[in-house]
Amino acid sequence: MSESNGGGQIAEELRTLVSEAEALLRSTANAGGAEFQDRAQATLQELRARLNALEETVRSRARDVDSYVRDNPWQAVAASGALRCCSVFSRAADDGCARAAPGGNSCR
Image 1 (cartoon, rainbow, N blue to C red):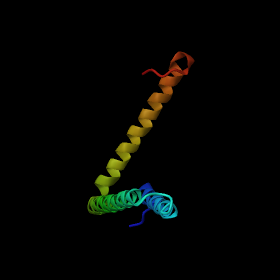
Image 2: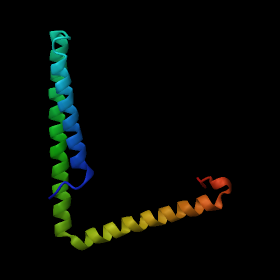
Image 3: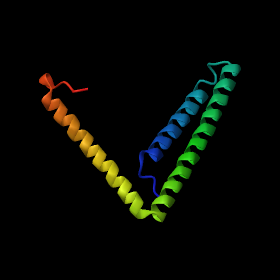
């Protein structure tokens, strides 16, 4: 299964952020005290562990969805169509409401 969704991109951006924070920590090692560096290092390790757990959760849920869609293709198509219809109807209602209200204010 490919990571064409935004989840993979978000995980990669978070990994980049952690790497940049680690580089910043190394570059300021001489300027800060040992206590600060130890605390920062512990925080970075915790962040990396949480990121790994989050990534595994997302992958697991993606596998579950993939399995469901493969086992129930017509139900998945129907659900997708229903969501699309709701989206279209909602947008049409919002557009009609904006045209009907004076000054372009919404009806809500």
